[in-house]
Length: 463
Ligand code: ATP
Image (cartoon, rainbow, N blue to C red; front, side, top):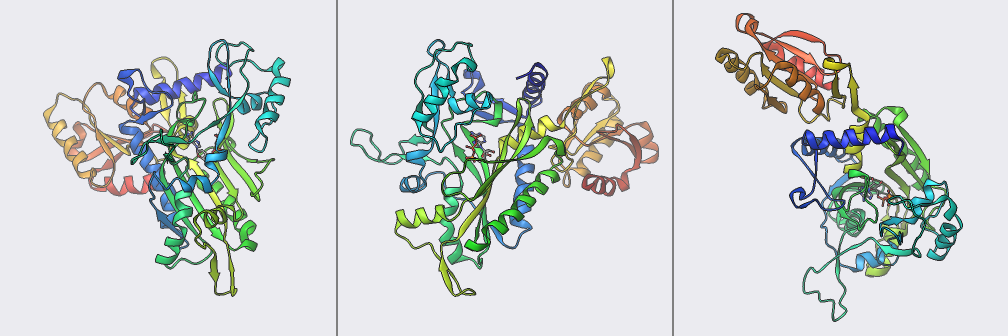
């Protein structure tokens, strides 16, 4: 990473820790590689992102329904999906420092493609032919083991599983969409959906990721938001074009700067895929995948029909025809969106004493919408009035009360967590029932009558 980019990366990670967005997991025990916890503001931000996604699909669309499937599934699911055989990354180990890395990502950094369609011998050949340009990202040496396939599925000992007698273990799901495919028939049979329709789900997924150096961008436990849309075979690509447009608009609606987002087409598709694009965000190390938007043909449902023996074809009464629906999907990690949003919104303004860090995050996503302060913390009449204002706003907005430290510090603290409005109760309030409302981005201040405060805030938070 270039120095300036490393700077932004470090600054955002530090803000996350300092201000209670994201903490390393079990930190008092030294942490746990590639696992993170969301703190008080992180969980609020996460909920707002998840709500925006859920509302966009499940609430606003008549043709999309929600689902919450389990993390554990019959292990046959993972045979059918191809995860047991093929859900692996090429692992290479440095013989000097023993750090483990993904060979495909190391090749990507020098502009060489090694994708999932290649077998491990081909990747080995390409890797060692390019050794003059490759070095260990940890110690800089060039002495590597042979590359081998490393399966990413996380095994468990759920149930009566014992390794000794060669029983099939159960797995923690490696992606949430398999839960959608295996419930496709139940949804169809129990609701009034008709092709084309979609199923949306938010839930945890687990992967034994080899490298994990990019904060919440790549973690071993993470949350996915996936929507699988089932179409007539002949409509797949038409629907796919629509979905691509909708996904772009969704990210724009989260307030991302347009030049921090771009489309990337997959050049080498897996054999069943029709087309695949990623929406990439400009992370501190460069553009990288935020969300996948893929046209998957009828592979998924065909596989589950074959392995389960249950006919998953759709009886299309209008066409008087039976077929296995084709699937288009959008798939994104919550942690990746959170990290991207924080990088996108992070700003440093002013100089010296006037310097402030401000998260210019979209108001609808801000964890706290309004902070209420008494001008001075040692005046009982101001404390009483400010508490009254705070209590009246609390049922309708996520609010925070802060009566400690000086007013400048309180503003800085709220700026850093992205609070759009700060309200100060002062001596004039006691005379004329008005308060000062300060806006985060412009720092403009307005006097607003307490009786009109709720209306003022509601309409401004919607803008
Ligand atoms: P990558 O190439 O970065 O490993 P992928 O192509 O394997 O990602 P998918 O399997 O398509 O990813 O997963 C869909 C989405 O889930 C990704 O676009 C990403 O937003 C999210 N995701 C995948 N793996 C992780 C992870 N380990 N941590 C956080 N989010 C993840």
